[in-house]
Image (cartoon, rainbow, N blue to C red):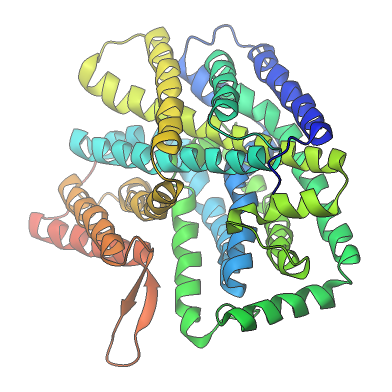
Length: 490
């Protein structure tokens, strides 16, 4: 990609960035409550978001700038294996349909704001609550940092290098998130998703026409993989279990993250969540179309320095400057929405499950909201420092751990919705084994999320998150049997 500034593309980019910035600040007046000095209002939008707002907000959480950049990059690099994100986003919605309305009802009835609140209310254990809250914050930090990676890739395509443009973008994000809370990303998500749909639909229709049709796109990608000696249009026989386990594990982890749970808790009812579980697969179609851009990169003969550059290079090479600027702004705005919700989710966890639990148990509602606002700023600064001072690859390695870590909160958060048999001691022991064991296996495998198991025959490669979760549940059951099952708090 060029080092020269593309004035036309940059002008279009700035226009849309300014538009969403204004919307971010206006959001403080959108559906304005009596006060934003309450964590329910600032951090959950008053729990009043209906079907369409929730659809855009949860979709905005789920389909991020890094998704737009990383999924095509993975397909460009390895081929069919990169499509594991498609079955994962199909599997997740039945889980959302069945489990999330039950979780929403529990949170609404008791005024819970975070997963930590739900766990403490169920089991009365501060240690288990803290484990769930810490896991949420730790798993979210590299996720926010990776939104910065996606935005940095776009800024580089525009000819803007260094940390200053990135820092300015996230300072603006921090300010309107501070003032408007969850209402800001909820309002911006409307614009972001419409822009992404326009970009993707245009790309998958126009780019193949420029490259000789889809037959030529697939033929060129196949030839590139054969020449490289790795990857392919079809899964290899040794990839099937890894592909399936990545899809299942990622699906179970997806709605354990603080930002996706924030979107759930902000909904106005269980039926809204169920409707979204039916409507959100439209984003799966979008994701499949996005993934095809990786194959188109081969057909266009592009040779990026990093696979992450493939999507910006496609737009920069094959489209007029004005449309490239529009596409880049859609991707960058796609970083702002999830980054804002992620920082809010992490701030809610810190406020409710650390500050209120250990520092100031008598904090007022206004005090809670203020602590959450300040924490949301610090979370963004922390993510920015990760990108500025650590190699990008280190941040990507950390992200591999995110799903493995957050998956270990599932037993404590979900099992208590359906049974009172588990004790906090068993779930905490299971969390320790799953969290520590999963981290160790990732380190053992060179920071890769897969581990080869030998069960007497040929080794089978499995997603480490599922292995750690299985160990987590096994230990929780065994400890519970030794301690004797007992009733948890309702």
